[in-house]
Length: 432
Image 1 (spheres, rainbow, N blue to C red):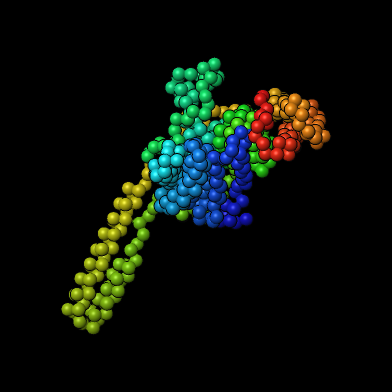
Image 2 (cartoon, rainbow, N blue to C red):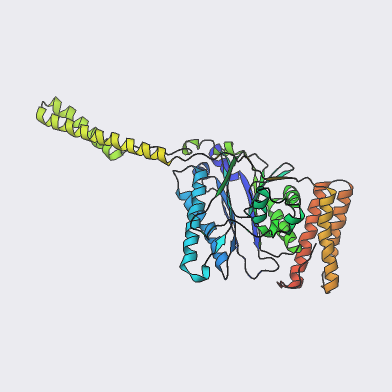
């Protein structure tokens, strides 16, 4: 594959958004906009977004959908602004639009949404973030949270007032957020990165419907052992089996090729805006200069003098426009973001181990007990076969195989539960 074409195969991704087990509507929104040309990849890379709306009636659903639709529009339209700053401004512009819509209709008053946006660029990964939806990166067996939760408990921990694992920290509601798009006319956007991108990296964006139900180490383990298409399904099903109290949205991106190689040949398109020549004025000056030469050859001196004056005027305007455009370009150039001194904010070991595998098996076992208690007519043969093979792989310390087989057991269990409950939300919670 030639360099200008290699951007097409630089990533693989999968996404899934689910209603959950307790909600009547899905207020999450998700967007994936891979580059559709080598030029767009060089300028703007691949863009991925997850938003979790909030508000009465359909307000939260509208807010999250507006964010996922408006941010890409503004981001790709700002063609002369460097990508990181363009992403920040796009989030701020989307905030203004959500805010205006909320003020225009009493039913949408104070509506809002979280947003986590990931741009995978040739120069690195950049994250724009507001709220408590999250962006993670898996590199090898190291699973890192790249975003800071704008939640009450995280803000209190950052201020030194509480520790997340203390009794007080555990008692604070995790869903109280301190920052979101929409409720206010202006919003502060966290811009993280650029982080170096390496082949094999996997990025995960999610709403708190996943992170609130599934432990970070479990997410990292499943992300590392399963292909993206299967991982999104297993993670959403696991969140639902753990209770499914909220909508769950998961988006996974895997980096397959070196991004610098993928962008090679298009680097001229990247960088700060340049002042372009005002071609009509240049053409006018050129015509005047040629005409003056011809008039001098014909010894028509008065006309030659007039033509030279016109040439001087055209040349002067050309120089002036170039100067104005150059100054404007310099003013447009923002300060490049620096990699955050605090991000990644948390790091977890993602290698499969016996404790994590036991927890996955325990989820299925808890559902067996709930099925017996509620007299659910589930067929367990396929689940039993998967779990028996998983236990055998675990005894042999074939950890990756054991995780994949336990994942298949979870998928089969959730399939059975959906068929049994036929879409009902009540009575389907499994507390673990």
